[in-house]
Image (cartoon, rainbow, N blue to C red; front, side, top):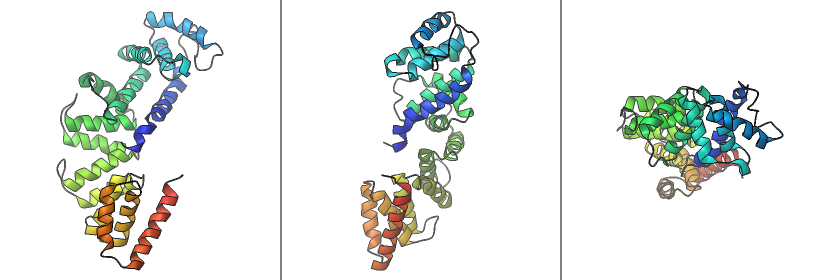
Length: 275
């Protein structure tokens, strides 16, 4: 599973805080700012009647608190329900957060039983607002035709938006598209560009493929030292194919070239992979 997935809770929380910052200029004094009050239980009691009256801001405020507040206060299903109610009333910040949450499910491959037609609406809103995981998710949905039209060009457009925000999974996927020439035209130069961006974010698959391209001279100069370096870096993450290809490349190198490649790999690891 890609490493970025483990950062999703932090990504979602950061996104939520950004939304929260401007959300709590409350339209009513009755629903206090739950995150800042010294009496959150009292604030919840004040918010609940407003949510039942259909107050979208109260629904969003309380929903966010149930989702991301102190552990003792968390009610995930109720929080998601309140966020959806606010979103369906056109409350923009709730729409963005709902899109964000659904995007995380699509991006991590855990979207079983999802209503894609419904999800596409909220994910699109979030993607258009610039949230990177939503952009990636929308690209995947266009690629597979889930909830939206199956459209490779539209898929690549959204994946590039995510890739340009340094989302390594999108960068690696684009590299694969251009390398294989199935979703779009085959273009080794373009493939190498996206693989290198993902490789520098410690994507082991991209590192392995970039090393292979250096070994074959596809889209980049044929350079066994660089090939061995990238393959060695990928191998350090346990990529078994990288280990095999690296050893094949090494059979065509001098001991001095191997030493140089190993030195470059160690330097890269020291700069990019912190203990």
